[in-house]
Image (cartoon, rainbow, N blue to C red; front, top):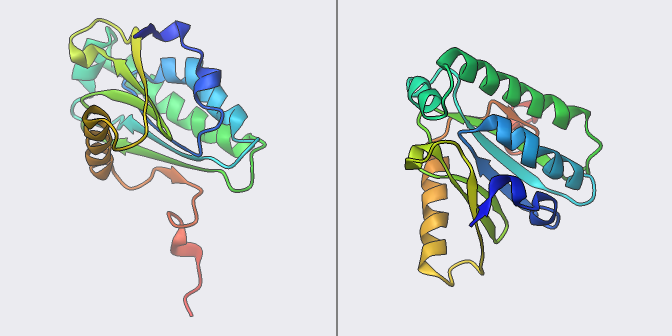
Length: 182
């Protein structure tokens, strides 16, 4: 386990093809991780999928309190980070095959996570009874090798299946309404 601020995020994300993330602390994500994902998407194709708590969620006040923030402040931060991420992506110089999907969810995930292919960061989160998202447990494994990794994969997949339709997407399969049917 490492302190969140001490993780070398630039070496965690560079070669990943698929990046998925959910965090209850969008400010830390934007400050510590997002620019590494954005920078590396110029070098090679990346499929990025980000999940954030919906700013209109009925659980927002609970999550804000656990982060030690006022609910209106937390809502503003969420909205700002979601918009900043989308704007940054649109303005970035990235590989033509890189894509971004931003989804929101009504309920927070039990564990905040970052999955980069076969690397995982499981964030120790205020929702786990700690004050502040201060630590990350870093794991690397071949998928299916360890039951704990399979459990984590299953947990992430279940959570993602409950997320709303994309708030933003530039993936072709997510934006097929512009395609002409023959």
